[in-house]
Image (cartoon, rainbow, N blue to C red; front, top):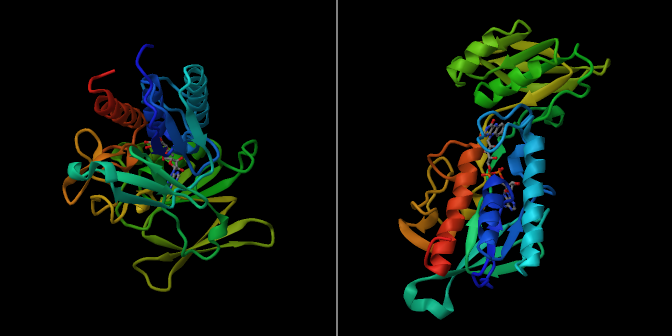
Length: 334
Ligand SMILES: Cc1cc2nc3c(=O)[nH]c(=O)nc-3n(C[C@H](O)[C@H](O)[C@H](O)COP(=O)(O)OP(=O)(O)OC[C@H]3O[C@@H](n4cnc5c(N)ncnc54)[C@H](O)[C@@H]3O)c2cc1C
């Protein structure tokens, strides 16, 4: 590689597929990277995928854990190569970014450029190029009494014991996919939706309708989860349209799958955000403020408005952002 190294590191927030793909693209072009993530492991949501991944052209993974392990391997290999080339990849795990500040670039006043400050609990990290790839997180069911018994992902406590009963709360794709995943392991699964109309994809509704050990219940709002004297859980629902009417379901494990939301709180007030909390980006993934580009400030992956949340899309976004930064710094495609 004969390109001169660029000394100014790009800061990337989020070590999911988007952030890691962007880091790999930048390192290949000899641009140093500081990668920050609030989790202790790379891969973001990947570790939460309990089932086979069949729609990612890169590989066919047994589950998300395998995919995140491979991602970490790729990151470690890239870091070793970069180190040999004297390019730094600094991967800071377990570091939550709490705030981003935009300051006018003192050296480039006329160009209307900004410099960025990335604030964590212990540090303020200044940088001139910032990428936000903070992905999705699950919606939580905090108002349910006994919410501490709820699980948001994973399987059953003891997968050897196929006599277990599970309750899955939710009526969208994630609830249906999760129910399909665990239906093989349970003797009985109740899928309980709040609405009378299911929001999940029709093909998932049809697939689940064929499972004899799955019962779908609609129009029920979760009220409480209690541990009984025998150690079993009892989940109580209120009937939405019949005041006072309650339904009690026994369960060994209760899952809440009530959708996902974008982790964009640190961007609120700084950049253009759609009403559903996703960021609006320019064709090169640059962010904007009141419709005006903020140079050197990028976002990609699940947090981008109007995109499907898919692994291949995250990889594409990450690489496209790297390509935009490379073009900007070196003036041509790598
Ligand atoms: C259950 C499930 C099943 C799925 N199945 C498939 C499938 O079969 N095929 C498919 O293509 N896609 C699937 N997906 C979607 C796919 O996993 C995502 O689209 C993709 O992984 C998103 O990558 P990302 O990098 O944009 O975000 P994420 O993976 O969410 O990564 C973002 C990272 O940023 C971190 N972060 C967030 N906020 C901060 C902060 N303030 N400071 C520091 N770090 C922060 C997060 O903790 C996370 O590690 C599935 C997702 C789920 C949850």
